[in-house]
View 1 (cartoon, rainbow, N blue to C red):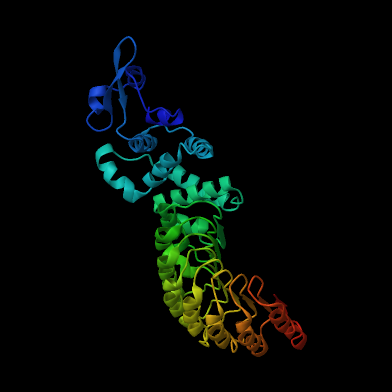
View 2: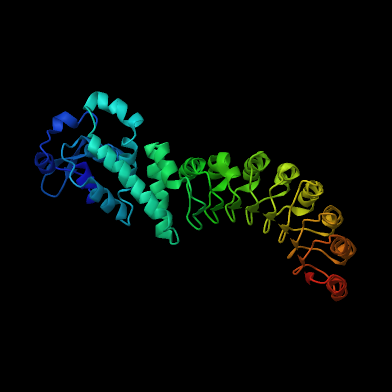
Length: 396
């Protein structure tokens, strides 16, 4: 009855429903069903409902393991998984969770043994769905289904199953899909069991600081990490900095574009950059680090262990006040290839420092300075340096 109700989006049951499933109301009113008085134009009638939809979904899942003849349980689960409106999402998570011996044990004491055949088929179904979905995450629907299969893995608490299905995964993208803190906890669990993860794309997933907190323990495992437009804020960078300081960090590329960062997080970020030896790409564009924030970062950039090759500081409300510090720090940085300082507020006062940076940083291949406040003469002075440095591109 509970499963049929979910299938038909039905939460109110009548005496006829109970009779159909050979149920007596008095047996279940204490905890599973509540009695309501329904009024219509002519009379009053008694109806029944579960105290909460989640209880209905749990009972529906539990029944699958107690039915002597479950029939095509795999087919039933696949059909439920294919529903686009998400009505079976919680039901399926309960089914996956009940396949776990740890979850089933206390229930077996009261309800008797779960059908072993059903448990094995559920585990096979979860494995089949995860493996099939990993390669189909290009569309929003595909990403949502992949996330749901990860929830099944998480609920199953089956580490062997997780390693067999996601252990060799190299790339994971949920770009554009809004993730809740619970989703982030599930991702953290999955990534923690993956030995080969390289690219984690969470661009515009709106995970914010709370979601990042759930992901924090596993972020150091990634090589390419995109947190573009996630509103993690300064407190989120504190968490991220801990991952960057992890001796096992292999993060090489980090995108923090548009995360409402200010100079308040610069000290934590600078501390991480001072000790991190893997990071070669850092995008801090479209934030509000300001001069004070960049001055703190400049101290870290001087460190010989910092191997930054591409640094993006565009749209950060930078002025002439930080130009000298930044130029001094980067002039000797022989790993630096690309520097993006577009759309800030540099004027001709910064031209001498920027010229010195361009002339002394011999590894520099491109410096982007569009959208600043240089005069035509200042632009000419900067642009002319291309003549003395073959292969150098200066855009102003």
